[in-house]
Image (cartoon, rainbow, N blue to C red; front, side):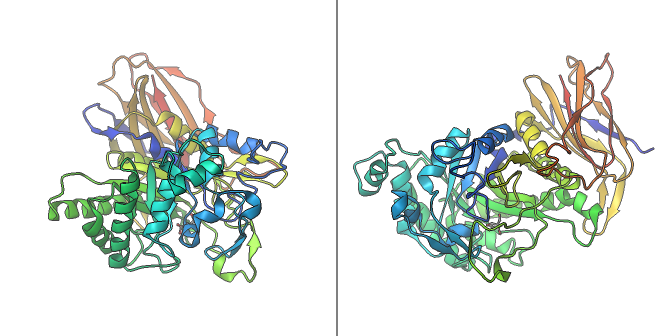
Amino acid sequence: MSQARLVVDPAFVVGETDPRLYGSFVEHLGRCVHTGIHEPGHPTADEHGFRGDVTELVTELGVPILRYPGGNFVSGYRWEDGVGPREHRPTRLDLAWKSVESNAVGTDEFCAWARRAGAEPMLAVNLGTRGVAAAANLVEYCNHPGGTYWSDLRRSHGVAEPHAVKVWCLGNEMDGPWQLGHKTAEEYARLAARAAQAMRLVDPGIELVACGSSGAGMPTFPEWDATVLEHCYEQVDYLSLHSYSQERDGDRASFLACATGMDAYLDTAIATADYVRAKGRHKKRLGFAFDEWNVWHSPDPAGERAVFERAPRLLEERYTVVDAVVVGSMLISLLRHADRVRIACLAQLVNAIGAIRTEPAGPAWRQTIFHPFALTSRYGRGEVLRPAITAPSYETAEFGEVPLLDAVAVRDDEGVVVFAVNRDQHAALPLTIELRAFPHLTRATHTYLGGGDPLAANTEEEPHRVVPRTAESRPLDGGEPAITLPPLSWNLIRVT
Ligand code: AHR
């Protein structure tokens, strides 16, 4: 049987985690908002019409920041439609997802709900079909205390205190030909720089995210990113990155190794930003907002649907154990880059490629991917350490030779936490963890997801079919933790 070994040493520091690494995303897409987070009349609905069962799960998921309202949706959005008395809000066509948008939920309701769920709102402005004035007005509406047109409008809607939104996205995926108001890199960069300038004049305390490439597979990556940064480096704090993984043509071996592709994408984006920094003699080092990432299998249905519907069932994945293991490994990749990735958003929160599923008038349940995310958010906070990994490898069509073990370590006040994935689909992987520099740690607790039916999923009928299992906590007796990682599994080993 093959063996793997990790050496964890406090000298191999990547950086401190930013809690916002564990963010998520709420878009007006399918049933993410309507009958997802918001469903007046649902038995658990609060006085604002938000589902209490979903809010509870969002709190359990542990998401300190939530991006809103899109996504592709934002590029056709007029934010003014979503504020003020509901009976005056217009119903509009949403061209991005071929839907009918009632605007029953807008900026005020979302920001207040996000705070109640323990998250800070992160808003995107429309730089597809709108521009500088609409963006600056929204910052004024949200963040200015009062005494001006837009801030007093907010107050007249019953929101006396500013929403204090700190992080703002300058549009969404503007490199994508599918995006409403799609632009060339130069067109976008000039608009983003001007919007950034105006938004910061309204509130100098905000942080801004410029659109990077919408994926490593875009033909314009990384040229787009370099051009955008050459125009906006000083005006922005982060560059956005997006990545969706899927199993193609039954090639599970490559799918399980997709964190290798995410690492390469991040390394290239970081190198590109650092090149622009050097070229422009800039002082600051740019951060990254990986503000959309997940597993996404179902085809994008927007173009094929003949009719515009309200809250259609779009992209309602039924995530499996394999998907959960891949989500766990994507989190490992993000942690490996914690020195540069300060914000990341699991896309999305509910129903549409969501970690949580709901039925209208029915229950809410945790998808398989919910579990590695919630546990990493809970235990993956502290100082990230890069372990030295010795492990057997396997061949993949997409990424060449890849280690069977992927792992990262985080040191916190209680000890060391190791996140590890066994990519072997058939065999368990015995793992020893060398912790010589941590002689005070005496117990290891192993929690895992996997090792059974790789296609098992959680459903309305069986919401707890896939849950993490915790093996007994074991004393180390002066030795090293020796753990067996089940085949095709995501693992959390806490050494305290
Ligand atoms: O998250 C779903 C969609 O994926 C978003 O609207 C868009 O930004 C991306 O293409």
